[in-house]
Image (tube, rainbow, N blue to C red; front, side):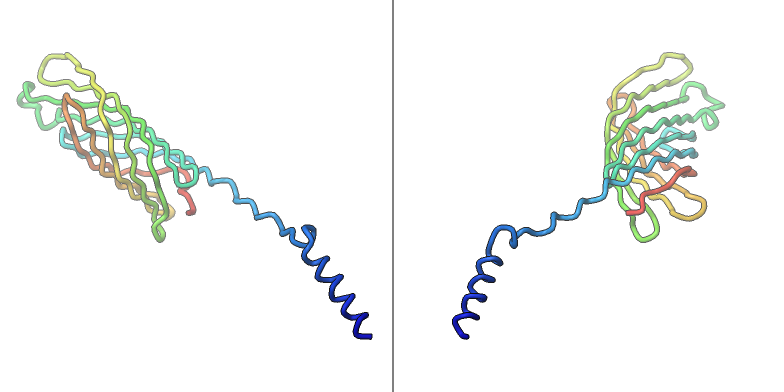
Length: 174
């Protein structure tokens, strides 16, 4: 009787140690990264004056692809003296990272921009390439407000700005 159980025990050990018994379930697939698109329209207070900004963002997971078009001018402040007039426009494409912070969403980005600068009473516009940088925080409430600290490092006229915008579209859930 004992030898019969030894045989069953030995056979079960052989079966359990075989490659077929050792196969595990394949690891679960990760879901594809979340894709979220949004646009924003805002007012800008910058080192060169007042203005506006339009932006578009695409999030793929934590990666951020961003386009910003902004313009600022001191026309209102320089109305009495046209020689101190300064206007700056910027078209920027940036790459960055973003993530959800509690109920809000935050991101940082940097990239390349085309910057047009016009000074004084002449209509000559100087164009240069700049490095735009920004940090943005977006509320996740029913009205999505974005607060952005932006800057552009260029050889013609470096500038900084604060942009308050209304964001249309979703923000990432992670």
